[in-house]
Length: 115
Image (cartoon, rainbow, N blue to C red; front, side):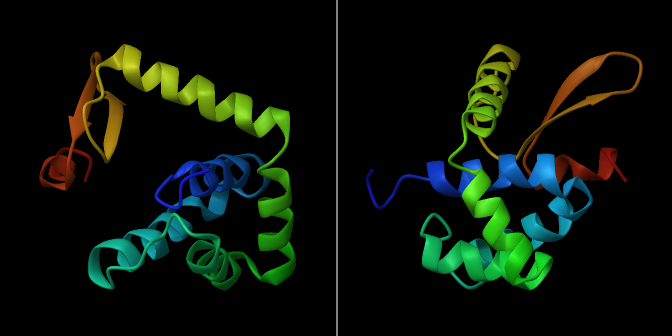
């Protein structure tokens, strides 16, 4: 796996949505800060695991990382990736919201709609 591949962190986030869904926002905030503000390579385990540990505690972060290699988690990531392509995702962050109908929101400058 390439050192620039984000598969490991994506699988860890997929596992997080199964094991600790209530912590997803906090984990994403930590990862976004590390990437966008601190310019850290969040795709590397030595960067994303400590972030998950701060959010979840060491034991729970370890469980999330271990779960990230399981078929259920990998399948969830594939399913979510396929759904994103089918929705027309062309960048991140990409959200699909529902008010009167489903529609995509792209980039943070559109987040005022969500608030």
